[in-house]
Image (cartoon, rainbow, N blue to C red; front, top):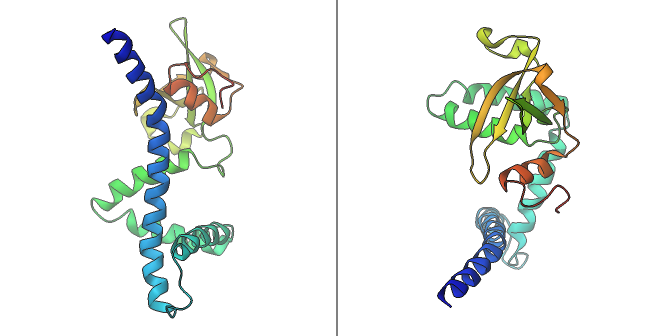
Length: 195
């Protein structure tokens, strides 16, 4: 009887946790946007024009506007110049570069970056993501035109291995990046076509 109760509780927990975490993240982003943008709008606008939620709407508009600006070459160059300054600041450069690289990995603007592949390792096949095909961008010791840098994520963990893999041991995988990441992180439990 206690085992059945424990299993039922665990099932409920596993069912609710992703929903609760997603709602909490959206709530946190909304509240943060409302506090920051709402405070600025209250300072700029008369009280008669401000209403609750205007800060959140303004936050979405600002994010969209920044996305539009980043399509202009001049703005991208200006942003790159600002990044170069951040890359020279102690401590900040380490944190910022890690965050930038992480978000670039999932960015839709990079063609071929993060291509899903199947890596053959000792007659075992693993799903991985090509993170670097251009060998000239790698350290001298890793430059090999017959290899590619592949990230192998671990299931149920934020972590994995980055390996230089010979191209003959890599074959393409017909999965989208987000679908493959979900598949790997859940150890294949979600199934290929889960949505």
